[in-house]
Amino acid sequence: MMLSIRDLRVSFEDSSGDSTEVVHGINLDLARGESLGIVGESGSGKSVLSLATIGLLPGTARASGQIMFEGQDLLTLPEKQMCGLRGRKIGMIFQEPMSALNPAMTVGAQIAEGLRLHKGMSQSDAKTEALRLLEMVQIPQATQRINSYPHEMSGGQRQRVGIAIAIALKPDLLIADEPTTALDVTVQAEILDILDDLVTDLGISLILISHDLGVIARISDRTLVMYKGDEMEHGDTERVLRSPQHDYTRKLLDAMPSRARKSLDQTGMEGPHA
Amino acid sequence: MKRIPLNLWLGGLISTLLVGSAVLSRFWTPEDPIKMNILNRLKGPGDAGLLGADQIGRDVFSMIMAGGWTSLGIALTATIIGGSIGTLIGVTAAAKSGIFEKASGWINSVLFAFPPILSAILLGALLGPGGLTSIIAIGVFMIPVFTRISRGAAMQIWSRDYIKAAKMAGKGQALITIEHVLPNISAQLLVQFAIQTGLGILAEAGLSFLGMGIAPPTPSWGRMLADAQTYISTAPHLVLAPGIAIALAVLGLNLLGDGLRDLTDPRRKQAS
Ligand SMILES: Nc1ncnc2c1ncn2[C@@H]1O[C@H](COP(=O)(O)OP(=O)(O)O)[C@@H](O)[C@H]1O
Ligand SMILES: [Mg+2]
Image 1 (cartoon, rainbow over the protein chains, first blue to last red):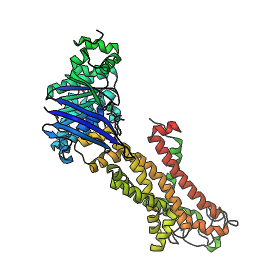
Image 2 (image 1 turned 90 degrees about the vertical axis):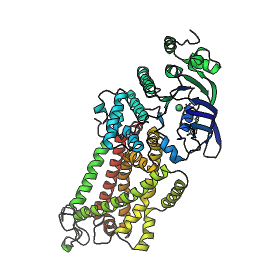
Image 3 (image 1 turned 30 degrees about the vertical axis):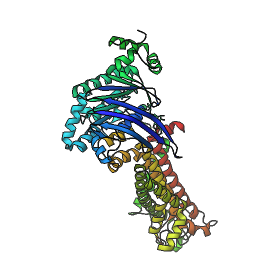
Image 4 (image 1 turned 120 degrees about the vertical axis):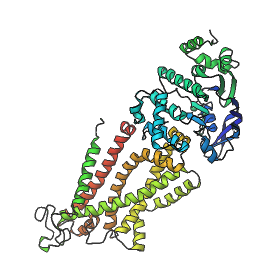
């Protein structure tokens, strides 16, 4: 297994010293090239789980359990080694394309950062590579766009830049935390297609996080359903959608707009009401 | 194109006049501001020069111009030094939580407890009065202000996802602070810089009023006010000229700061 998480618990300490556990013992496994969807309503602990995996939990958080990644436990790995791994072996795409890009820096410079620091590329090599990446995520007129600032781009274009940054170092694992939640429905589909194609072509394992089962159903081989820090259900995406074992999963399926349910049917999966 | 707010116009205009006349005074003033002409003693505006003459016949208009250089020079130097130190402490405190943050908070509360006049008197006792004493006293007073502002602004930036992205790119705290935090808090710092320079001018005037400022005969607005006290009924122009100069300078820099804030922070504009 490339990634295997065992009994992961995360708690936050507040200013008075009381701690509240928000992730209560999650287990999951992910093989190379596989994609896992994590679904659950807001506040389920999905982002906390992904931040724990890249070692970027805020200082007030305590994590216990095991996060084994390519044979190393990330929870006990010294920060220095974690630094070399983060970004290079594990990439991340963030939810808010506005907050995920530095407004005071051109998108080209932001894509080039990791290439220069992790791979020691020269300024000009990094720029050439950044251009190639912008083309890979299908940004039109990439040669001009590379010098744009984030506010000059649409939400969908910014999120493409986010994808370009995350895959720039060809990580083994990509975590996408609600990559399409802030986007229009039409743009959502484009972004998911780009993401799906890239991880398949590059053989990257993917953890796709969303509160929307429709998004998960599009790409994920397996699905983990979370609620308030607990696992509700975990299995092949098709099985989870076809015969949900848990009331909470059924509720999520019911909450999907009928249009989205129909598209599930078209991809060969039948919703519970089909 | 954004419309330029009125306060920015007005503040920019007054500040430009202030800086312009201060710089000009280094090369040209209508009269030599330290030359006495006893025949003009206490003459009113128009009778001797544009703004009259003082108790020993110096040209008030020339003294206001030259005093502007003194006030602005001391206030700007103090704000640049105090602002840089305060910002350095603030962004470091935001980057490192824990001991450094607690210590800097503690030091700042102590510094904050000393108003500039009090610290100038203490410093003056140590170093003797003068321009340097004023710069240090006012600069020390600026440190906690900038620490607080820059720390708060930097903490907000540190919670953004692009900081996480920068960490993933392999950047350390120092590089993140320089390349990601500072450029994104610079507008807020600039606003504060204008406002604090105005306060610095006020503080400098206060210090030289008390005789703790720059040594005579270098003209200074605060000392002009102090000297004029005795003549307030016979020659009110001697009080009005430096008084209005100080008020205008502080007002102009404040308007400039406010205007810059409205320009860079649309949220505040809606609220006001
Ligand atoms: N920095 C933090 N400090 C305290 N509590 C937090 C922090 N971040 C997240 N939490 C709490 O952890 C829980 C899970 O949050 P999160 O992982 O963001 O949920 P999701 O991503 O599934 O919407 C929530 O109850 C949230 O309030
Ligand atoms: Mg989240």
